Image 1 (tube, rainbow, N blue to C red):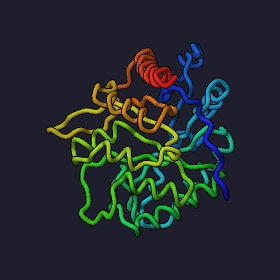
Image 2: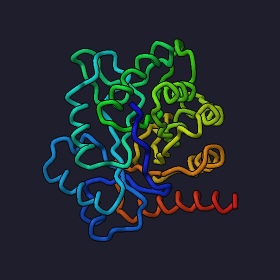
Image 3: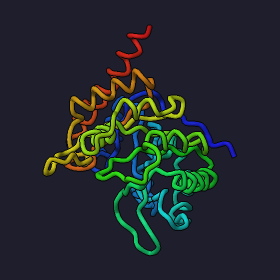
Image 4: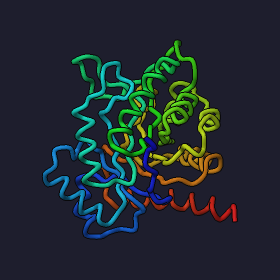
Length: 279
C-alpha cells in the first residue's frame, strides 16, 4: 500500500495539553496546528469529545509514546487497533511515533529506550513500521530519540538508520532538534553529520523543546523554553533541510498558554526569515 500523504501546514504549532483545552477553544489563537499524545484519547470520553472540537478549528497531529517500534516481541495489536480507531475518528493531519523500544515479553517500561543501529534492527523496525502504516492507512512519521547511552554494536548512525528506514518503508521523519542537541552534548553526536544524513524529502516535521541539566547530563524534560543553542541548530536545519511544520513541546512545568504562543511565534519568525532570505 502507498501511505497517505502528510498534510500539516508549514507553520508553527504547539503541543496541546489538558490545562489549555478550554483557553484554546475560547481564544482560537492563530496557530498553524496542534499536537496531542495519542494514548490520552484511546478511551474516548470527554477528552476525545474535546479533541474533536479542537479538530474543527486546527489540523491535529497524533503523537504516540507507547508503540515501542523496536521492541523485540510482536507488535501490540490492541494498541495498534486503538490508534486506528482514533485516526478514523479524528482524521489527523499527521501521525508519529518514536524510534525506540519499550517492552520485552510481558515486561513493559514506561520509557523510550534506545537500541543498536544495526542491519538486523533496521529489518525488524521496517517490518513493524509497515504493519502500522498498513493498519492505519497513513504515512507514519518516526522521531529521532534523546539517548543517554550508545551501543558499540551499532553499524550506522541514527541519522543513517532513519534515512534507510524512510527509504525502505516510505515513512517520514520527525526531526526533534532538541533531541539532537541533547545527544550532541551527552554522547558527542555531530549535529551537522546527523542533518546531512537525513533525506530532506523525508523530513516532514520539526520538534522544538527545552531540556534540563542533572549532574552534568542534559535531560529531555520538555520543561523550559527552547535554549539559544537549539534555536541555532533549528536555523541550521532550516537552511539544510528547509521549512517544515514546527512544534513547540512543553510537557512538564507547563507555563501559561501565552508562553507557548510566544515560543511558537519565534519558530514562525525563523521560518519566515528563511523564506524571505531566499526570495
